[in-house]
Amino acid sequence: MLFKREIKRNYKSFLTVTLICAFFQVYIISMSQTFGADVKQILDMKMPPEFQKAVGMAGLNLNDPLGFTGIGFSYVYLFLSIAFASVFALIVSKEFSEKTAEYLFSLPVKRVKLIRIKLFFGLTYIFAAALFIFLATIIGMATIIGGEIPWLTISLMMLAWILGGLALGSFAFLLSSFFSRSLTSSAVSMGVVMGLYLLQVVISMNKELDFLKYISPFDWYKGSDIIRSEEISIVYSLIAVGISAACLYLGVRRLSLIHISEPTRHG
Figure 1 (tube, one colour):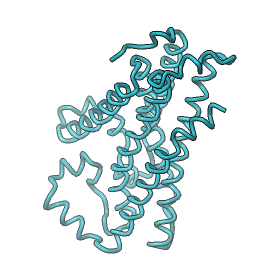
Figure 2 (tube, helix red, strand yellow):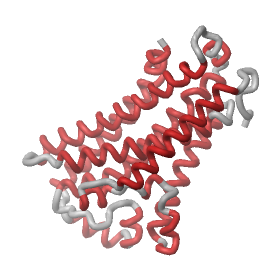
Figure 3 (tube, one colour):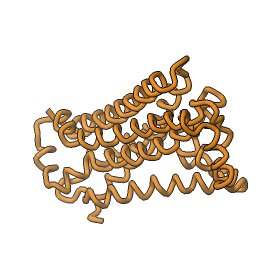
Figure 4 (cartoon, one colour):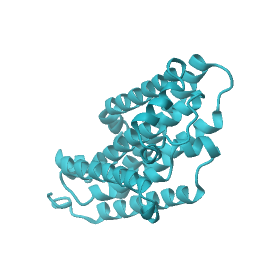
């Protein structure tokens, strides 16, 4: 019942996010047929190499359609991360804002179980969105480009979206446990995501700050690196899983112990 309730609450945002990202990926792929290497010349003239590196465009072969998916990877990664953080930030805090938390947690089911059901929906949202965009990318390449499909590379991109988005979403969930207003929870989470993205840009443009690269999930996975190496970093992936597990555990624990009448700060 609770899982279906979350589907009804979030299906519009799911369709919006996935359709926008899927359309963008297909559009990017179609650009390879129209503009090809001309885009590379424009990028070289308009963007310094440091900035191209910061947004994951450095070293992409734009004579190859796969190179264009590398351009799309970074933007889809950012958009999905914002969406995932929003879903996880609101998944419980919205109950407090809508004054339904007291009823929900008074049901003859343990509070921890209710929260876990909500989190299971959040995980389903992430996997389903990434899979939908993965399929759109595959279909786009098959219909527009034809030939051999780079299954491994695109699968790794999907995995990177999942791991990075899960880490950010889990952190947003933990942050949301400190706020009783869904608007505040969402705003803080969005601020963190955008701040980490900008941090990644700054790190990429300043070698002196390279030691900070472990902080931003946007520095863990870049389309150009995935295309070039056909792998994703095991170290960063373990960090992503560790952060996700820790944040989800701490968030569930905090929400399971607080009083319903005063769940969190009223910030």
